[in-house]
Length: 186
Ligand SMILES: Nc1ncnc2c1ncn2[C@@H]1O[C@H](COP(=O)(O)OP(=O)(O)O)[C@@H](O)[C@H]1O
Ligand SMILES: O=C(O)C1=C[C@@H](OP(=O)(O)O)[C@@H](O)[C@H](O)C1
Ligand SMILES: [Mg+2]
Image 1: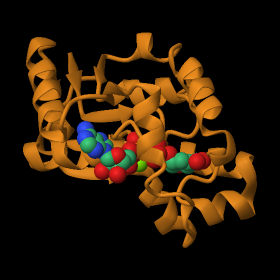
Image 2: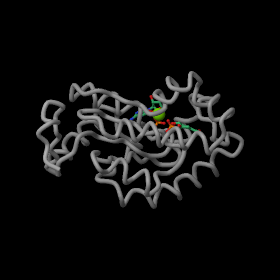
Image 3: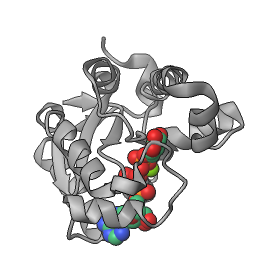
Image 4: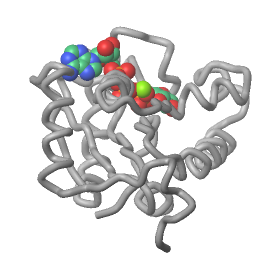
């Protein structure tokens, strides 16, 4: 299959930002974190923007950012995980992106999101266990749509990078480089 970029999706704390950066370094590609893009555009932290703008404006801004970055060549894109990927998001990302879902056992997600309380505005820290169970339930329906699913519960970041890079070969994914942009077939 012919793609332009790699997109990492998955629930909060699955490792999208952490792993995404490492894959980009490994491939010598650009790394894009949609959360950081939104923070730059709005001049606010994700938590502040969500608080002041509300969920609808937050989602709209996120889709807007996705539409821009989904066209990039040779980029690893980590997509903020507060809402499970829906069909519209999927269509935008899948056109040019090889979609990798990172999944993680609920206990590990609880552990990871507990490290930076305040960063993720929609996490219910008072009922974290139930919150993560619910998120897990919602994300289960998304994995079948992804090109590849990796379990990050018990692997180091380096191992996960190796696994993903190996899968690109097994799936025979070819990536259009920036230089070939003009001559690409429709
Ligand atoms: N495979 C891993 N092994 C150990 N720690 C990890 C791993 N993946 C992520 N982490 C850590 O877990 C936390 C959440 O990861 P992060 O990349 O921010 O997830 P996401 O972007 O999916 O919410 C971070 O502190 C990160 O360093
Ligand atoms: O709590 C929230 O609403 C958010 C949590 C974060 O998820 P990640 O942990 O997936 O980065 C962030 O990406 C997202 O944009 C907003
Ligand atoms: Mg992140």
